[in-house]
Length: 313
Image: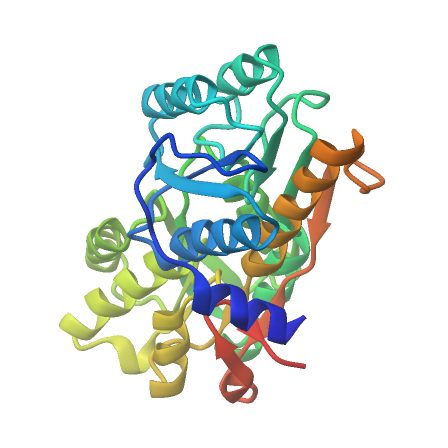
């Protein structure tokens, strides 16, 4: 698996969303925002796997906007895509876009995030966010201790992953009554917003000892704000995603850990299932919703991180 993922990542390139097609057909891949290395990897791996299987593949981004997403689905339909790989913009708001593709007889495979309706997409392949959050929270307590005030940075409310991770953190942290959540702020998975929200929470709560974050980008924004305030040495920060920047921050001691999402695995798997469905009418998966367990990256195993979002055994 590691060798396959390395070859996929090495072969992948970001391309425009055009109407070219191969003999096998066009697979349209729609991600959130490739400015984030997590979503960049998602698109790159899916594209490389599709091309390996003989398809033409194009990558486009909706950047969390459901209107853009709907327009990209229209383009995929116009271009006679044989399948769509979609990271949905909104758990509720993306349902209509998926229905539109289904009405055009184009199978849709969702990656990374779910929609709040089953029976539409042929597959919903996501990280096991509850498992990953529990894993991260346990490591966070180990780094932080069992007493003190902390703050939390939350992802976009339109993404079910934000609530799942926050609830997963709470399930673990509620077992430690002397840990007090002093504040929480929504930073929409964004590094700049994470920085600004961290500044605000730090001003209101100068005695905090730690930050727990819904993703790496927000965590890294918090790290930057804490460095600027001269507070990073005394405040521990944990992330979630397994991004290259987070790994670098772990190596430098600025971030305590990150929870690695196996995005490279499920992005490739979604394309494989699309190929199976196109050829046989069956995905080969037992269920529509498929969970992929997360892994923990700390200073103790960070050297096993071999490629973006790949941790060797």
